[in-house]
Amino acid sequence: MEPAAEPRNMSQHPRLPRGLWNRLAVALGCFMTAVLATGIHGDWLLFYVQSKKLWWGTNKFSDSSLGRFFPDEDNRTAGQNLELLDRYYMKGVLFYIIQSLIGGFVILYGVGGWLKWHFYIQRRERAAEWKCQPERFLTPEDDRLEFLLGSMNMAIGSVLSGILVTYIMNGGPNKFYYNISDYGWTYFLLSIPVNYLYNEAAAYYAHKSMHIPFWYKRYHKLHHRFKCPTPFGAVAMHPYEFLTLQFLMELPIFFVPMHAGVFIFWLIYGYYYSIMDHSGINLDALWPWQPAVMFHDDHHRLFHCNYGFNTTMFDKLHGTLMRKDRHYSETIFGGKGAPIRSKEVKKGE
Image (cartoon, helix red, strand yellow):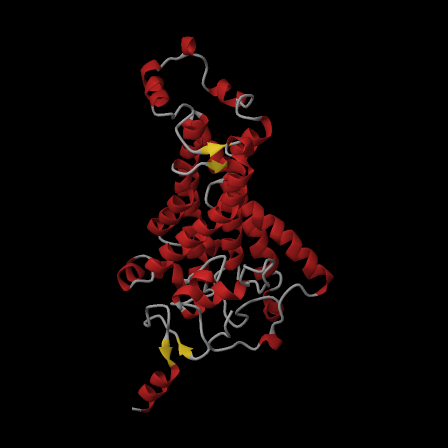
């Protein structure tokens, strides 16, 4: 990564982990964030169902709990309506939506709440030890808005995830497969980096398009209201933007043969790091291709640069990586900033 514009004094707030307690807290936080990742877009149920299918196999797998809620044809009181649901692969849709909502909100509030409590409440006075922007916190108004937006999108994501799971459980056409032998080991191994690259390309170009002035001012500006985001900031955005990202992440399962394990792994990986990127907690990267949390925190601080989520690859390719010799602000679009000299000349006029 190139040096950051307006470099921060890292000696004032060294990166975590620091001390045994912080090490344990970060380890627990990472695990809980991974759990939160399965719920924050409402996809925990999809993860659960596909994991069961992978474990038991598609021939042996069945959801016995569904049968208790939806008896056989002879006992149906609304046969015509249920036949319509069967036709569109929606049998048991209410059951799955309720499961998705309950699980999603338990994960969101339980895990997300713990992260907020541990860092933003218990260690607020020691922000220099852990926070990317230790001098800045959300206002109480923005803190509430971030939470409410995240909750609203959580509900939307849970409903859609419940519908998607219903569709898959009822045999709706899709490209999931569960046995590596179906397409061979070569295809399986190649699909791992290809799926990762697709997710990152989709996230980068969708995100970059949201920084076009027309879309930014109408939609994405709401997300950038949170200049020092917290874990709930990962989904604190306009619903249009939330739905766009969720749609792009799940689109491949209808067009490209995808091993369920590969798809679920990268889906959760992406959601996990989305939460970490918005956590405001100054953590280094775990993997060579993964930027530090500061990378996306700088995006919120400086607005139009560092568009990538889990890699700097596309920012380097398109010249949108933050540079030390450039000036950035909310009114400088394009991702490449403005020469610092232009800024200085303008001040002297």
